[in-house]
Image 1 (cartoon, rainbow, N blue to C red):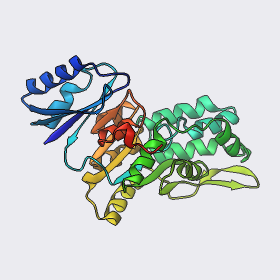
Image 2 (image 1 turned 135 degrees about the vertical axis):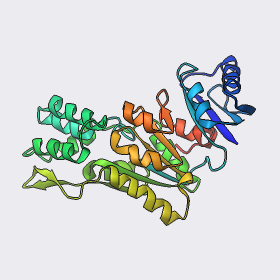
Image 3 (image 1 turned 45 degrees about the vertical axis):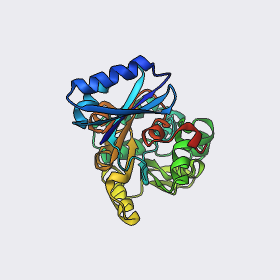
Length: 292
Protein backbone atom coordinates (compact mmCIF):
# COMPACT_ATOMS: atom_id res chain seq x y z
CA UNK A 1 0.00 0.00 0.00
CA UNK A 2 1.24 3.46 -0.95
CA UNK A 3 0.19 6.97 -0.02
CA UNK A 4 0.15 10.03 -2.23
CA UNK A 5 0.14 13.14 -0.05
CA UNK A 6 -1.04 16.38 -1.65
CA UNK A 7 0.27 19.45 0.19
CA UNK A 8 -1.06 22.80 -0.97
CA UNK A 9 0.68 26.13 -0.53
CA UNK A 10 -2.78 27.67 -0.25
CA UNK A 11 -5.81 25.36 -0.34
CA UNK A 12 -6.82 22.12 -2.02
CA UNK A 13 -10.16 22.34 -3.78
CA UNK A 14 -12.24 19.15 -3.28
CA UNK A 15 -12.52 18.98 -7.07
CA UNK A 16 -8.74 18.82 -7.27
CA UNK A 17 -8.78 15.84 -4.91
CA UNK A 18 -11.17 14.06 -7.23
CA UNK A 19 -9.00 14.98 -10.22
CA UNK A 20 -6.02 13.40 -8.47
CA UNK A 21 -7.93 10.20 -7.75
CA UNK A 22 -8.98 9.99 -11.40
CA UNK A 23 -5.38 10.52 -12.53
CA UNK A 24 -4.18 7.72 -10.25
CA UNK A 25 -6.76 5.35 -11.71
CA UNK A 26 -5.87 6.40 -15.24
CA UNK A 27 -2.30 5.16 -14.66
CA UNK A 28 -3.57 1.71 -13.78
CA UNK A 29 -3.30 2.10 -9.99
CA UNK A 30 -6.22 1.58 -7.65
CA UNK A 31 -7.04 4.51 -5.33
CA UNK A 32 -8.45 3.53 -1.95
CA UNK A 33 -9.47 5.79 0.91
CA UNK A 34 -8.64 9.48 1.21
CA UNK A 35 -7.85 11.14 4.55
CA UNK A 36 -7.37 14.80 5.36
CA UNK A 37 -4.28 15.44 7.47
CA UNK A 38 -5.19 19.12 7.58
CA UNK A 39 -8.52 20.21 6.13
CA UNK A 40 -8.02 22.08 2.86
CA UNK A 41 -4.23 21.93 3.13
CA UNK A 42 -2.90 18.37 3.13
CA UNK A 43 -4.58 15.10 2.19
CA UNK A 44 -3.53 11.46 1.80
CA UNK A 45 -4.78 9.27 -1.01
CA UNK A 46 -4.09 5.59 -0.48
CA UNK A 47 -3.49 3.42 -3.52
CA UNK A 48 -2.06 0.16 -4.79
CA UNK A 49 -0.05 0.00 -8.00
CA UNK A 50 3.06 1.58 -9.51
CA UNK A 51 4.27 4.35 -7.18
CA UNK A 52 6.62 5.92 -9.74
CA UNK A 53 3.87 6.11 -12.34
CA UNK A 54 1.52 7.72 -9.85
CA UNK A 55 4.11 10.27 -8.81
CA UNK A 56 4.81 11.19 -12.43
CA UNK A 57 1.14 11.80 -13.21
CA UNK A 58 0.42 13.78 -10.03
CA UNK A 59 3.40 16.12 -10.00
CA UNK A 60 2.34 19.37 -11.65
CA UNK A 61 -1.28 18.27 -11.93
CA UNK A 62 -2.55 20.70 -9.27
CA UNK A 63 -1.20 24.23 -9.11
CA UNK A 64 0.94 25.26 -6.11
CA UNK A 65 0.77 21.77 -4.63
CA UNK A 66 3.62 19.47 -3.64
CA UNK A 67 3.23 15.71 -4.04
CA UNK A 68 4.92 13.07 -1.88
CA UNK A 69 4.43 9.42 -2.87
CA UNK A 70 5.76 6.77 -0.50
CA UNK A 71 4.90 3.46 1.18
CA UNK A 72 2.28 3.68 3.90
CA UNK A 73 4.46 1.71 6.33
CA UNK A 74 7.20 3.69 8.06
CA UNK A 75 6.16 7.15 6.87
CA UNK A 76 6.98 8.71 10.28
CA UNK A 77 10.77 8.74 10.13
CA UNK A 78 13.13 8.01 13.00
CA UNK A 79 16.15 9.82 11.51
CA UNK A 80 16.61 13.02 9.56
CA UNK A 81 19.88 14.17 7.99
CA UNK A 82 19.61 17.71 6.62
CA UNK A 83 21.68 20.20 4.65
CA UNK A 84 22.05 23.72 6.06
CA UNK A 85 22.59 26.49 3.46
CA UNK A 86 19.41 27.25 1.48
CA UNK A 87 17.71 24.36 3.28
CA UNK A 88 17.65 24.95 7.04
CA UNK A 89 18.65 28.60 6.58
CA UNK A 90 17.69 31.05 3.85
CA UNK A 91 21.19 32.04 2.71
CA UNK A 92 24.45 30.62 1.37
CA UNK A 93 26.83 31.70 4.12
CA UNK A 94 29.95 31.80 1.95
CA UNK A 95 28.23 34.14 -0.51
CA UNK A 96 27.31 36.52 2.30
CA UNK A 97 30.85 36.47 3.71
CA UNK A 98 32.03 37.31 0.20
CA UNK A 99 29.73 40.32 0.19
CA UNK A 100 31.59 41.76 3.18
CA UNK A 101 34.78 41.28 1.15
CA UNK A 102 33.23 43.00 -1.87
CA UNK A 103 33.42 39.91 -4.11
CA UNK A 104 29.94 38.35 -3.77
CA UNK A 105 29.14 38.09 -7.52
CA UNK A 106 32.38 36.22 -8.18
CA UNK A 107 31.89 33.72 -5.38
CA UNK A 108 28.12 33.37 -5.80
CA UNK A 109 28.65 32.30 -9.41
CA UNK A 110 30.95 29.48 -8.29
CA UNK A 111 28.50 28.49 -5.54
CA UNK A 112 25.63 28.26 -8.01
CA UNK A 113 27.66 26.13 -10.41
CA UNK A 114 28.76 23.80 -7.61
CA UNK A 115 25.23 23.40 -6.28
CA UNK A 116 24.00 22.62 -9.79
CA UNK A 117 26.59 19.86 -10.03
CA UNK A 118 28.62 21.58 -12.74
CA UNK A 119 31.79 21.81 -10.61
CA UNK A 120 33.51 19.47 -8.18
CA UNK A 121 32.26 20.53 -4.73
CA UNK A 122 35.57 20.14 -2.86
CA UNK A 123 37.56 22.03 -5.50
CA UNK A 124 34.94 24.76 -5.69
CA UNK A 125 34.93 25.16 -1.90
CA UNK A 126 38.71 25.47 -1.74
CA UNK A 127 38.69 28.03 -4.55
CA UNK A 128 36.02 30.16 -2.89
CA UNK A 129 37.58 30.04 0.57
CA UNK A 130 40.95 31.02 -0.91
CA UNK A 131 39.35 34.19 -2.25
CA UNK A 132 38.33 35.13 1.30
CA UNK A 133 41.92 35.08 2.59
CA UNK A 134 42.61 38.10 4.78
CA UNK A 135 38.96 38.87 5.56
CA UNK A 136 38.47 40.07 9.14
CA UNK A 137 37.07 37.12 11.13
CA UNK A 138 34.80 39.56 12.95
CA UNK A 139 32.48 39.62 9.95
CA UNK A 140 31.41 36.05 10.80
CA UNK A 141 29.44 37.25 13.82
CA UNK A 142 28.13 40.24 11.84
CA UNK A 143 26.95 37.95 9.08
CA UNK A 144 25.20 35.65 11.53
CA UNK A 145 23.42 38.53 13.23
CA UNK A 146 22.61 40.63 10.15
CA UNK A 147 21.86 38.09 7.44
CA UNK A 148 21.31 34.56 8.67
CA UNK A 149 17.65 33.60 8.98
CA UNK A 150 16.23 30.20 9.87
CA UNK A 151 14.17 28.70 7.04
CA UNK A 152 10.41 28.81 7.70
CA UNK A 153 9.27 25.49 9.08
CA UNK A 154 12.75 24.31 10.14
CA UNK A 155 12.15 24.54 13.88
CA UNK A 156 8.76 22.86 13.68
CA UNK A 157 10.17 20.06 11.52
CA UNK A 158 13.10 19.25 13.79
CA UNK A 159 11.31 19.74 17.10
CA UNK A 160 8.26 17.72 16.09
CA UNK A 161 10.36 14.83 14.83
CA UNK A 162 12.45 14.85 18.01
CA UNK A 163 9.33 14.96 20.19
CA UNK A 164 8.25 11.79 18.42
CA UNK A 165 11.52 9.98 19.05
CA UNK A 166 13.53 10.82 15.92
CA UNK A 167 17.19 11.82 15.78
CA UNK A 168 18.05 14.91 13.70
CA UNK A 169 21.52 15.60 12.30
CA UNK A 170 22.72 18.69 10.41
CA UNK A 171 25.45 17.92 7.85
CA UNK A 172 26.71 20.92 5.93
CA UNK A 173 29.28 21.69 3.29
CA UNK A 174 29.29 25.11 4.96
CA UNK A 175 31.14 26.21 8.04
CA UNK A 176 31.19 25.23 11.71
CA UNK A 177 31.11 28.88 12.79
CA UNK A 178 27.56 28.99 11.42
CA UNK A 179 26.40 25.36 11.56
CA UNK A 180 27.02 24.81 15.27
CA UNK A 181 24.91 27.83 16.19
CA UNK A 182 22.20 27.00 13.65
CA UNK A 183 21.97 23.44 14.97
CA UNK A 184 21.63 24.67 18.55
CA UNK A 185 19.01 27.28 17.63
CA UNK A 186 16.84 24.86 15.67
CA UNK A 187 17.33 21.88 17.98
CA UNK A 188 19.43 19.36 16.06
CA UNK A 189 21.10 16.53 17.99
CA UNK A 190 24.39 16.88 16.13
CA UNK A 191 26.11 19.10 13.56
CA UNK A 192 28.92 18.25 11.14
CA UNK A 193 30.50 20.86 8.87
CA UNK A 194 33.73 22.37 7.59
CA UNK A 195 36.09 24.37 9.80
CA UNK A 196 37.33 27.71 8.48
CA UNK A 197 40.94 28.26 9.46
CA UNK A 198 41.62 31.61 11.12
CA UNK A 199 45.01 33.12 11.95
CA UNK A 200 45.73 36.44 13.67
CA UNK A 201 42.08 37.45 13.50
CA UNK A 202 41.65 36.99 9.73
CA UNK A 203 40.56 34.15 7.50
CA UNK A 204 43.53 32.06 6.38
CA UNK A 205 41.89 31.15 3.07
CA UNK A 206 41.75 27.44 3.90
CA UNK A 207 39.52 24.88 5.57
CA UNK A 208 40.56 21.97 7.75
CA UNK A 209 40.77 18.70 5.85
CA UNK A 210 39.03 16.44 5.06
CA UNK A 211 36.21 18.46 3.50
CA UNK A 212 32.63 17.62 4.42
CA UNK A 213 31.05 17.03 1.02
CA UNK A 214 28.73 14.61 -0.72
CA UNK A 215 30.48 11.45 0.45
CA UNK A 216 30.52 12.58 4.08
CA UNK A 217 26.80 13.36 3.95
CA UNK A 218 26.02 9.88 2.62
CA UNK A 219 28.34 8.23 5.15
CA UNK A 220 26.73 10.18 7.99
CA UNK A 221 23.28 8.97 6.96
CA UNK A 222 24.46 5.36 6.85
CA UNK A 223 26.33 5.58 10.17
CA UNK A 224 23.47 7.28 12.01
CA UNK A 225 20.95 4.71 10.76
CA UNK A 226 23.25 1.88 11.80
CA UNK A 227 23.76 3.41 15.26
CA UNK A 228 19.99 3.64 15.72
CA UNK A 229 19.54 0.08 14.49
CA UNK A 230 17.06 1.11 11.79
CA UNK A 231 16.78 0.58 8.06
CA UNK A 232 17.23 3.43 5.64
CA UNK A 233 13.51 3.24 4.90
CA UNK A 234 13.01 5.01 8.23
CA UNK A 235 15.36 7.87 7.30
CA UNK A 236 14.62 11.28 5.79
CA UNK A 237 17.29 13.26 3.96
CA UNK A 238 16.67 16.80 2.74
CA UNK A 239 18.79 19.26 0.78
CA UNK A 240 18.94 21.51 -2.26
CA UNK A 241 22.32 21.04 -3.94
CA UNK A 242 24.18 18.44 -5.97
CA UNK A 243 26.32 17.49 -2.95
CA UNK A 244 23.10 16.34 -1.24
CA UNK A 245 22.21 13.83 -3.96
CA UNK A 246 24.00 10.76 -2.52
CA UNK A 247 22.23 11.01 0.85
CA UNK A 248 18.90 11.89 -0.79
CA UNK A 249 19.13 8.82 -3.00
CA UNK A 250 19.87 6.55 -0.02
CA UNK A 251 17.11 7.70 2.33
CA UNK A 252 13.66 6.14 2.50
CA UNK A 253 12.29 9.64 1.93
CA UNK A 254 14.79 11.72 -0.02
CA UNK A 255 13.47 15.26 -0.40
CA UNK A 256 14.74 18.03 -2.67
CA UNK A 257 13.82 21.35 -1.06
CA UNK A 258 13.42 24.25 -3.55
CA UNK A 259 16.33 22.51 -5.19
CA UNK A 260 18.61 22.78 -8.19
CA UNK A 261 17.38 20.78 -11.23
CA UNK A 262 19.88 17.92 -10.91
CA UNK A 263 18.99 17.43 -7.24
CA UNK A 264 15.25 17.64 -7.89
CA UNK A 265 15.56 15.00 -10.60
CA UNK A 266 17.38 12.61 -8.26
CA UNK A 267 15.01 12.98 -5.31
CA UNK A 268 12.07 10.78 -4.41
CA UNK A 269 10.09 13.88 -3.42
CA UNK A 270 10.25 17.56 -4.35
CA UNK A 271 9.11 20.41 -2.13
CA UNK A 272 8.77 23.38 -4.49
CA UNK A 273 5.72 25.28 -3.20
CA UNK A 274 5.71 24.94 0.60
CA UNK A 275 8.09 25.54 3.47
CA UNK A 276 9.73 22.75 5.46
CA UNK A 277 6.52 21.89 7.31
CA UNK A 278 5.51 20.04 4.13
CA UNK A 279 7.82 17.29 5.39
CA UNK A 280 5.70 17.04 8.54
CA UNK A 281 2.54 16.60 6.51
CA UNK A 282 4.40 13.99 4.45
CA UNK A 283 5.00 12.05 7.67
CA UNK A 284 1.35 12.30 8.67
CA UNK A 285 1.65 15.01 11.33
CA UNK A 286 -1.27 17.45 11.48
CA UNK A 287 -0.54 21.04 12.53
CA UNK A 288 -2.06 20.37 15.96
CA UNK A 289 0.77 17.84 16.51
CA UNK A 290 3.61 20.19 15.62
CA UNK A 291 6.10 21.40 18.23
CA UNK A 292 6.97 25.01 17.40
